[in-house]
Length: 410
Image (cartoon, rainbow, N blue to C red; front, top):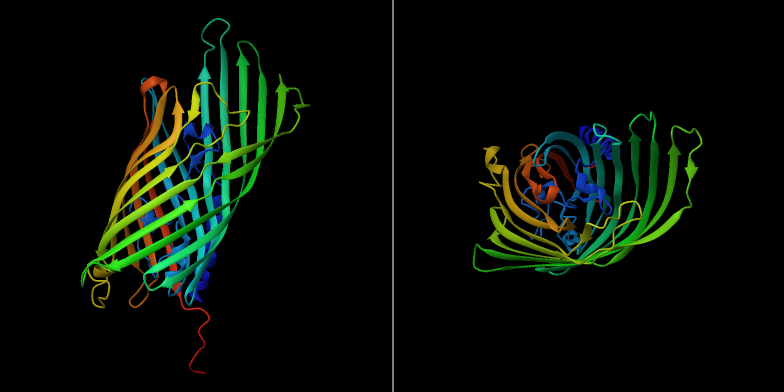
């Protein structure tokens, strides 16, 4: 009963958080916003490394992992983030709380299934450019919110005890709203333009995982996933209000097909199962066609995305019944990402470090609470751009139980 109450509370908290602004980055103005990490906190605490066929934790980055589950897993997570935005002359701080994921994984013999809800991108910026101190100067304000989310369902299959394959389908949906206000000196209301874009589309992902023994203790783990290129349909409307006119002008609706590029992710690692692991992840993504009519700019272009990460975990003694501390999973990772965005001929990169811990909920239980911190730097102050120094604190719950097992006693 207590577990049901906790799960219900997590569901309520996650949907409330889902409505909140997921980023404070000015770079979320471009394309369809900041791309969010699409895995669980367990993997995020290792900089995204997820190469092991885990039987008690859900890996939503590679659908083949579902076939390795031995218990039903419900997981939910969220993040509190703080960032400092810097130019060569000024700085400002921003904070936000976000919902990260909600997912359920179910073992079915050689098969495993999972479904859930994950934010894919977030838009959230407020930019003020005040030039009213000069003659005939103007003041402009830009603001954006929203993003793209996905619901997914996937299936994994264990071909052999060492080799899994899997696939999942995702329905992407969301809304992005941008508002710009321009005021001239001596004008009270000015001109306001609001653009609203409704986004929807379907995408697919396939994956495979293979692991084998190197010797009596060491194992080799590998993971490969591929996301197919897809189309995101954007239906946009524009409203323009001039000098406080109560009847805004509505422009003609525009339909745009945005192109989401294909992506390939490869990971490999070595370690001792349920003791330690060190691994690496490489990800590469093609050029996308993500600019809409309201956020296209001559000084912006899109390039190929790249990610390089190394991370791992350590468990002192996962089978200990006398020391709770010995069963804690300690995680760490380092990452470098080229985000695929070029502004003023400067590539926007992200360099970060993550630390985390998985704390078991009671002796004999595979359920756990996970905590993690992530800090790093995105962007640059060169070429009149903005550098973001960020710090994220994340919390997640992973509940494990045996479902569909007939009771042996009345």
